[in-house]
Image (cartoon, rainbow, N blue to C red; front, side, top):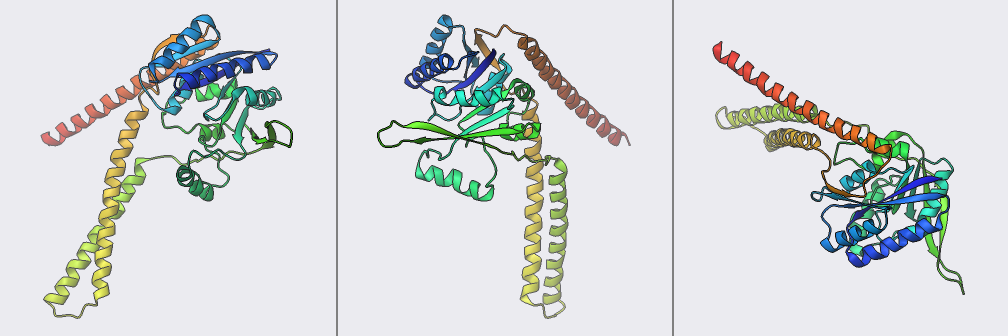
Length: 350
């Protein structure tokens, strides 16, 4: 018997939330051999929704409510739920058009068969609107036909070995699917669709397959922006000198200068200025992102029914690690600023 943690970011209003709690209780009663805990992460939802969850948590200890101080984003909500999960596996269902009681039993079956990552998605996604489908899906599928995005999946189940890795992420902009691909665990895909035959009710049919996730090995570095600035500065200088030389040859030396020479030198100058500005703004953006990454991914305001399990010790270690990384980063910033101040004083004395 294992413990299954279901993590739900609270974004719905009361009516949808009440229906969702009934579906979760149906899931818990329909899957035999496992206990369940339902972790709701509130990041600034409607006050009535939070009150419904508090009432549920008082009467049913399976419900846990984690209230964040503000809306930190979708990734932060998932990471907050993972951090406080105490199950042997953790499940999510980002899609709203999904009844977890009809889907998660199949995902749990594959997890019992030693699958570390089980991804569930609709075989034919339900579009929000025609314009949204065209804008968000068409070009992305054309450019990356084999890539699985977090927005495309409707359910996800991961083993505790995997969500322990996810709980150590300190970057609020991390893509969960890319991190899952980076872990190296082989995922299992479950596609489901609604089919109905004559005289029968609509029912879900499942199709299983092994897939491979893609991840990027590129690292962001300020060297890229500095190289862009250097190349742009060089092109701007060459283009400017060439333009000045051509003007001097045409006006003062009375030499014939073809128009395309002047046009080429002007284009080189403009391209150089653009590359230089991209390098300057890019490095400033990189520094801003580095400051954001050094902050905590989320801040918890209160917890109802906190987990009482050995995972609490691991969670405290992760929180201490985040605080220690933050203190080290502040020390580095202080050391860098003091070093630059000392070097400037030495230059003044010289």
